[in-house]
Length: 291
Image (cartoon, rainbow, N blue to C red; front, side, top):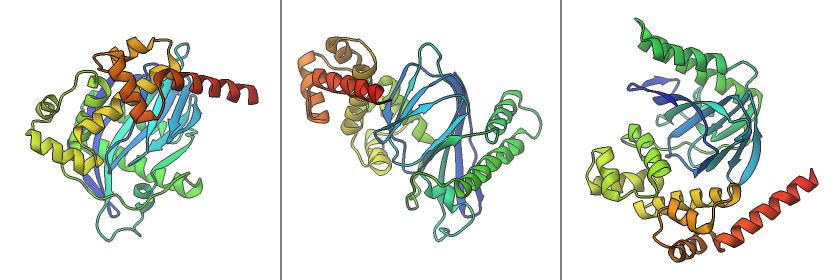
C-alpha cells in the first residue's frame, strides 16, 4: 500500500474541499461493508484485476478501468479475486457545499452520493499524475496537487451531467475535524477485533467525551454501535466468501466465545451465522444459474 496524505483545503464554485489522501493498493480478498462520514467521498479506480463491490446491498462487477464514487452514507464492501487481485487507486476527499450554494457549478458533485461506470482514460491519468507529484515533492508540488484535485472534481462533475448518476441526495452538512475521519475508519476496519473507546480517543488525540461527540456528529452512532457494525460487517464477509469456521470468525471479529458471537450476530442480522452463510451461498448459486 502507498498512501500520501494532504493537509490543506480550498474552495471552488461554492464547494469546500478538504482532501484527505490518495492511495494505491492491492486489495485484500475482502474489505468489509462500511460507510464514511457525512462529508466524505471516495473515488475508486481499478487499474487492474477483478472482483466486485456491493453498494447498499447491490453487488456489481469490478474490472480494469472501472471507476466508481462513494459518498456520504453509502455502504460499500469490496471483494478482490484472489487469482486476479484488484489494484486500486483511491482518492479520499471531504467536501461540502457552503451555505446557499446549492445552485453553484459543482453542486452536482456534492449532491451525488454514488456513481459508477468506465473511466475511459479520463480520471486515471490525473490520479497517476497526482501520485507522481506526491512522490517527487518538486518545487510547486502543493500548487500542482491542488490543480490536479480541482481537475478531478471538474471532470467528475461533467461526467455526472453527461452520464446520469444512479443516486443523488441533498447537501451534506459540514462537520468539524474532518481530517480525523480516515483515522476513525481505519481503526474500525483494521482494529475492530480489539478496539476500545479509550484506544480510539488516544489515536485521535481527543478525550473520550470528545470522541463520543465526534462519532455521534459524524455517524449518528455510539462507539459500541459503530464497533458492532464493523464486527458484523467483517463477519458477514467471512461467512459469505471464506470457509472459516464460525468459531474462527468469532475469534477474528473480537468475541470471546462462539455463543456470544452467535447471539450478537442474530440480534444484528436477524438470523444465525450458519443460516446466513447457507442463505448467501444458495443465493449466489441461484444467481449463477440464472446467468
